Image (cartoon, rainbow, N blue to C red; front, side, top):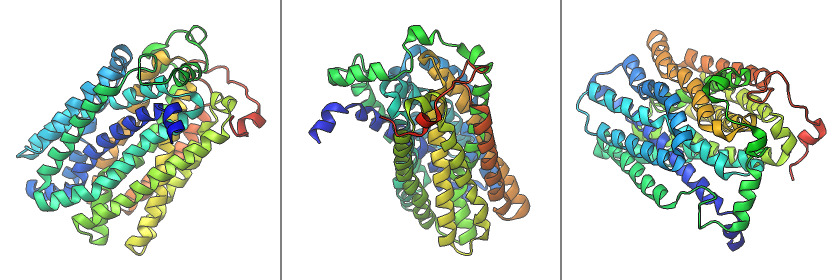
Length: 438
């Protein structure tokens, strides 16, 4: 244990990223857990709830590109603290909303500052992670989106039932302020972190990029990134992955309450199951992927195969309408949820694999996230209309499964080349690509 602590202190940063995304996701889940209670108090139907669920994404999408550029310019320490502090403020203010309009405004503010989350997280991963460990580091970060809500869902459901929905917003806002305090006290770059052993610091700096800055060249900037067909391939793949993810985030508790007659507390408990299972499975599968993907395979973009297979597993949600009980439905939903989560993890890591210059990290992840958010924000709204029109969730579930399969096609055929070198695919030895990494 001491040896692990002495040689792998970078995992402290990974743990902070885990909690960072966990709080970010818990803030989003709060309105979903409280959705049925809010709808009764504010007289909102399925369509109105759909708009409320997606509202935080509206300014999120608009603010993504500026947030990415600011992250590259200001650095992750300051930008992450500013963003988390301000989105937590708006989350807390949501607990004081007395009307749907006021609640909508706080959701918009929450989303505007959450826009910096992905650029900050992946700039941090780029700074702190040896490339052979990038998949696992990304999985640790992304598992926060599931483990923390998995733990928090039943607690939030209890808070909503006992203290009212407003207290759930205040409690999650306070968590964000506590994270900011810890982050500002601890975080530095590897070069500046005095608590990091010299040997580990040298290894991180040596192994975090494929090429030194002099070889990788200057950043492409937004113009060069938007000109890359691979960047667009990652963009549309994430659009498909996120459409499915935002169905779960926005509608899963409400779906379980409507289709299986569960109470708020019961739906919170059932919602926790796929979140917990996927958090564990993402870590295990990402560790396996990092082990079997050699340096040549990572450089050649072979991680896209893992994204494709995960999307196929995600498409199993199509079978949920055939489930005859809540237990069978939860088995199918958990399999699909795990597939979607692993697809997210590998696709996030694939961006860094395909990106040559660290100077573009914030911008690249802003574009990438814009693809996911741009399509993801439609998921709660479209689902609301489909449920309102058909009276069931069946057609919405089939649609998200088909979109997941479409993402498989996009990632396999549109991300073959490095970003900025779209005309010339990198050649790797196939035997080396599939051999365990050393």
